[in-house]
Amino acid sequence: MEPVKIGLLGLGTVGGGTVNVLTRNREEIARRAGRAIAVARACARDLHKPRICPLEGIALTTDPIAVVEDPEVAIVVELIGGTGLARDLTLTAIDGGKHVVTANKALIALHGNEIFEAARSRGVMVAFEAAVAGGIPIIKAIREGLAGNRIEWIAGIINGTGNFILTEMRDKGRDFEEVLDEAQRLGYAEADPSFDVEGIDAAHKLAILAAIAFGKPLAFDMVYTEGIRQVTREDVQHAEQLGYRIKHLGIARRKEQGVELRVHPTLIPERRLIANVNGVMNALLVMADAVGPTLYYGAGAGAEPTASSVVADLVDVVRTMTTDPTHRVPHLAFQPDAISNLPMLSIDDCETAYYLRMLAEDRPGVLAEVATILGNAGISIEAVVQPEPPRGASQAKLIMLSHRVFERQMNEALAQIEALESISGKVTRIRVEQLDGD
Ligand code: HSE
Image (cartoon, rainbow, N blue to C red):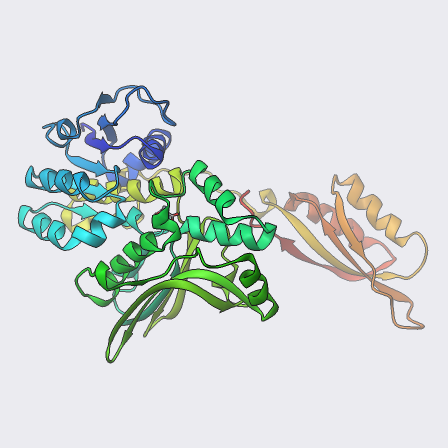
């Protein structure tokens, strides 16, 4: 089947990230969507500017209308930002019967009601997962995963730049302006960074969240908005002394009297998980009546995290265009004919670090015997602790942390250790995972 052709409006941070993700994961994306997805046309203001992505096979133009009106283009991906041209192009695309995927929170917050109405009457999709919290699939979680609940409130760190600034001020005592410059260099900040620091970007996102959580029209104008400019390093330190962290939160709460929508710096008890969300990471705590609190965490800005949501929306749209409508989302995520058997690893072939606890005779040379067995098995020891045994005891507890090894290696070493006369009973093992990205 021919690939679905998309037209990209914007080749900046998110546009470049989208091309990179579509290129690198081309095959897996096609197996999920049911068809390949190809960027046929892209528009950028300056065609000579260096880009973060390959541009082979993409017809480039400086004219966005040429992309939107290209008869080959089935889905327009709007990544230019702003609310003027972006609105016109989105409405033109819809009018031309094209689906639209956008990462533009200002566009949805301000003109979503009009855009969705146009899309409904034209029978096309408008998808906007990337508009809120970058790579976190929060729109899908609220709209689909929590569909059985009455949502009571949402509290979120929904501006990565602001969170990055507050984190750097707290952890490194850095100055506001210097960190903001860095956020701009890293591609986190909006084209107009005052949107980040004045809370407007978070207010756009909160307006969208409130609409999908409470079933109300988008109402950006009703969001009370304060930024983080007045928060000083001293405030961050004083809050810490009181057991709190300062986070820039968007809060949407449904009350009997009405809906609260507010964005402002907020002290949160430091023991709350959300108080420990740092750097450019975003997190949303959603309180719903059936499930209770659920927490969603991930990168809230940046090229590929945001592209992750753009591409997920593209897959959604392509599935509706191509697959059996009664099975729009395949049971196992991939199209049934694209499921492939991967080799499965047995536990022996799994690699982890280990915590070991054993009971050893309290005499010279025992630790050396254990260490020799581990060393001969190629197992490197990271730490050893021997708590002082009770007075008069002849045995001592030996606690060890190993570096990562295969389970098979550890099994062989433990069998030898357990066979030592100096060791009583079985060695307790608990696997250790750093969960730091490897
Ligand atoms: N400027 C935004 C942020 C980008 O920092 O969160 C993602 O919406």
